[in-house]
Image (tube, rainbow, N blue to C red; front, side, top):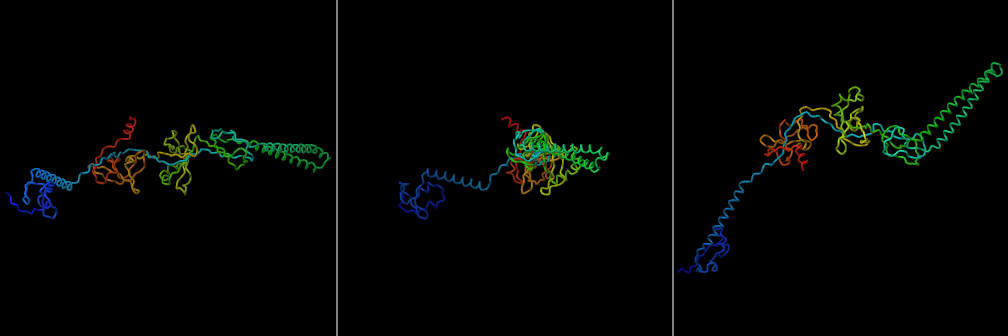
Amino acid sequence: MLKNTSVRLQSPAAVATPGVLFSAVWGGGHGKTGRLRRDAYPDTLEGSVPRPPAKALVFEGVAAFLLAAALLDLGCSRGQAPRAAEPEVATVPVVQKDVPVVSEWIGTLDGSVNAVIRPKVEGYLLRQIYKEGQFVNARDPLFEIDPRQFKAAVDQANGVLGQADAELAKATQDVDRFTPLVAERAVSQQELDNAFAAQRNAKAAVATAKASVEQALLNLAWTKITSPIDGIVGIAKSQVGDLVNNQTVMTTVSTVDPIRVTYGISEREYLRFAARINRPNYATTRQGSVLDLVLDDGSVFPQKGQAVLVDREVDVKTGTMTIKGFFPNPGHILRPGQYAKVRAALEVKTGALLVPQKAVTELQGGFRVAVVGPDSKVEIRTVEPGEKVGSLWIIDKGLKLGESVIVAGIQFVRPGMSVKAKPAPSEDDGASRTEGR
């Protein structure tokens, strides 16, 4: 039989075991002496040390194992960081070939001839004859000014001419009559001389009167305002009833076939091609550069143009030299006032190194490309780009033939980083896939 002796036990918190169930069986708290709970082991006498049940020992072992495994996994995770996957990038090789260097400028279109229509006489506008915006031929009527006052001026000039003719006839008769009388001494020589003078004055008066009649007829004809050239006529700036004079701009007629394009080249470009520009008879040899015209919608005008003349000076305000060219314009598609890009292939660069434009990035005025080496490591390299050719860019310095540059995924790479490079699909392949959808 067990003695009823009191045994002092440690608190469950002091026992080095993770078994929660075993700790729950024992009473007490932190820092205090605990005794057996009689409700947990009713068959055990107070003060004696019981033997834990077998189920409690199993739960304690499982809990201890799980805790040890968790601590071991935590230690491993702190000791080793997961390795990042290599980013995938698309690359293209640097290619070399002879390419025409195409220069591009902004040009303004204008009529090869622009006739500003002003009236020659003053009067009230009676009617507008032409239809605005249409093609007119030379000498087609455009406007008519009230002609009544000019018809009156013609009649008046004819009357003066009639008087002058009568005076001339009388003076001629006097000369004819006085000439034989002078020989007979019937009249004096002085009277004959006066008759000759009167005849000459009458002839002069007749000539003046004729000129007045011609001027009056011209004024009457100028009341009908006609087009001096073939071309497209603009919107009327004068309305019926307006009082117009020779300072009034009524409309404009422009010859648009051929049409003229005006653009400016920089002083550096001029010095680069000065020998070609300054050759003799440049403006008349028709040997200027062949021009292409890119319209506002991105389409290329089908007709080829040609540079014809170069201005004598460099504009001190813009630093450019003006060049004029002409384009055939059948159908009158091009109109004065349009803006367009003018392109010309001025030279061919042999052995040029080319990369896609999207492979080149600009940072603070410098240009860089990402090069993937044979060891799949990235190198950020500074380059000197030249002219742009379509979607490609000529690289003058910084790259070698056959090197691979990144065109997609460049934002994810850093110098020295290992990457997984794959060839970029060509633009033709992309277009084929788009068409096949």
